[in-house]
Length: 328
Ligand code: IPM
Ligand code: MN
Image (spheres, rainbow, N blue to C red):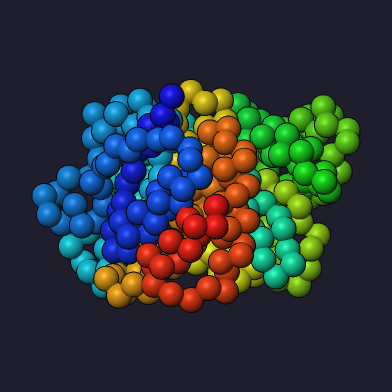
């Protein structure tokens, strides 16, 4: 039966690179149909629409979501900050319970994966203002950490580490200062570790981890960390392996109660729209992650190899897509 893929082309170069990724998946012979969702900054500016429950429900009926970059051109003030981030991206991550943000990093001889918790921490939106706009104003932004939320993320990371040759997992946090959340993460990590005696473990404070990421990234195999630390550390990791332009993300619901969402880490690059200069490879990698998650391991491996072979290709967006499609 054909898979049903929800497609959010997104803004700027998004539609063009997502089209190339779909072209490559089609070339593998994996059978799928698409359902398009017109969402993003462009749509918001056009008619004020952000994302509604009916659209989320329609996505629930799909097997996976392939999402392009979302966001207005830099300096465009028509889209208030947070509209896209909280209104679309986080709403999808939370609404579909995509509790693992999986970011693989390969390049410069490195091969490691960051498992970022994706539904809690300081992203949860707990907090608020008091006396806003007065000299007494107060803003709080809490970090929400539940035993269930931490445990399912940590367990996913142990399973992943166990499946990789090095079988090594590092917990990254700031247990010396965030003594409540850090304590919960550390205890949960230790409890889950007892069930995986064949996985070697380590702990790094997040600030030290930033040094290691630059000076000794070979030490990492699988890293598990909280939402905000993971956001920051994965931008650094992307730069270390050769630029976030090449990185892909899986927002996963490992329990498969909802479709998972795959998206490139880079932005919408409005300045190069319609120039043919947009590189579709990160989005094609996301498509490989997507078909892999759907259980099409062979197609995923063929796309991954074709992307690796295409690293040094030059050409337009569609020429690169054609070349990868031809070699899968
Ligand atoms: C990312 C992005 C998002 C995040 C933003 C756009 C909400 O930076 O996917 O890393 O902070 O998670
Ligand atoms: Mn980020």
